Amino acid sequence: MNLKAKPFYLSDEDIKWVNGTLSSMTEEEKIAQLFCLITYTDDENYLSYLSAGLKVGGVMMRTMSFNELINTVTRLQKNAKIPLLISANLEAGLNQTCYTGTRVGCQMAIAATDDKKYAKELGRVIGEEASALGVNWAFAPIIDIDYNYHNPITNTRTFGSDPKRVAEFGKTYVEEVQKHGLAVSIKHFPGDGVDERDQHLLASVNTMSCEEWDKTYGKAYKDSIDAGAKTVMVGHIMLPEYSKKLNPALKDEDVMPGLIAPELLNGLLREKLGFNGLIVTDSSTMAGMGTVMPREKAVPLTIASGCDMFLFTKNLEEDFAFMKKGVADGVITSQRLDEAVTRILALKASLQLHKKSNIPDAQKAEKIVGCAEHKKVSGEVAEQSITLVKEQKGVLPISADKYKRVLVYKKEGAASAFGGGVQTGACDRFIEKLKANGFEVSVFVPGGGWEGMAAPVKEITEKYDLIIYLVSLATKSNQTVVRIEWAEPMGADVPVYMHSVPTIAVSLENPYHLLDIPRVKTYINTYGGTDEILDALMNKLTGKSKFTGKSPVDAFCGKWDTRL
Image 1: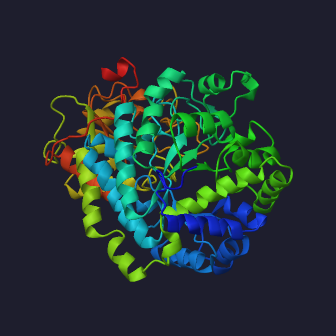
Image 2: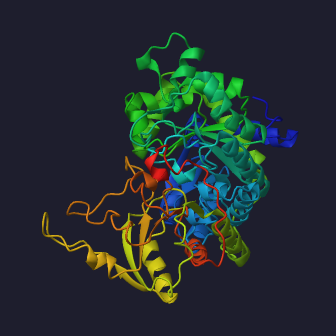
Image 3: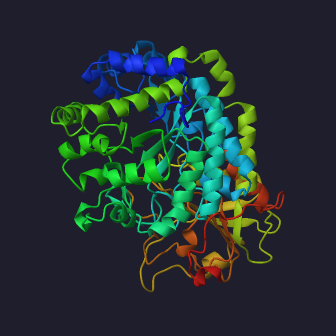
């Protein structure tokens, strides 16, 4: 551990602060520094308990109002003996942390622009807004590779399925956001997107060979590490081929997910990839860790195996007790404890938290967060990313003169915490935009009746000039699939009139819906449902602007019939 080297680059003065702070700490204070907890509230008593009572190393922000977030960061840092790491999921923009923050675009939208400029802009806007609010640790970028279209979590949170693009865009984000006084956390090592299962629910598996991994995930991690990424987030993901290569004695049942796999943390990440920064676990509340061993054993083993920081707790008092017992029993040696805490302090020193107040200036922040210039970037990303995947000649552009009567089928899901969050009500908002452009819009409602009792075909073919499917189904944890579910009776809203009525399908959130509507001949992916995206979509449908987005994934899902 060289504190003067990448990624910390500490001065002698900084190192003196790190060593002096470490030597002044009690064992209990060191253990507390291992924890990055979470808050959903700006309650003063709770925040004082975290920072002045427990003296934790960091706190993650969930989405709050501007004033609540300012209050939260101020109260945390004001009461902290050692400055806190203030973290947030900053994948798509500050709207994941502050309601009025700018959503630049999910990572897949950024990739769909096919221009690294927008990966840099994503980092710039996030960096400027986050630093103004006192957030200093970005749990981003995601450098998972979306190989498996069945995966219910990676999806639009990633830069796509091309390893080269993922590596390039990830590195660009890292370089830019860290210019603004934030540390990144590249995630989710050793790499999600191969398995079709959700690591929130089990320990998932990256089945790649060592050679395949080196060329893909390995390159993405190495490029971001070489670019100076300060932290790596390790997931509930197993990499059995590498685990067994680095430790040939391992049996199948001994292969563990990354956050408790010392051969991956030390042999692969530290030694082979040369990572000298801080390693943090992914959320310890996820079920992946619990599916492989008892929690009492797993909690201290994350640190003993090589992680430096433990993200969240399932039960605060119990998990603290588990960690303390791990130290008392020697599972975590005093040397390993000091190594972990040294890296935590070094990260703080590299961000200069020990030399500044860390209290956000509300007046200054208000001028930056969600400002017009940042919103303009969001509009540009929307304009450049919307992708016309397949097109039936003669259908586009649309107009009220050409297609006066429009039937809309809505397939909309619940909100998601990922990728900037699904924009609730997006289908209804787009319907209003259709009406504002002169279209007469009817929304499909399934009727009753089974065999022999359905409405005649002509009720659709003679009443409507155009059919539009609006699908807004986003990925979220505890959801094992992201597929279109059709209405009763007998798939009443399945697209069966497209041979008689021009039909357009628009997916607002998930790029893979052609799997379920393969014969729709005009299909569009927008990678979100913000007003900026919906406005850009309307402009493209009506011919006011061209479709320029390039799909970062195989939207045809490898199926022959989706290309018909």
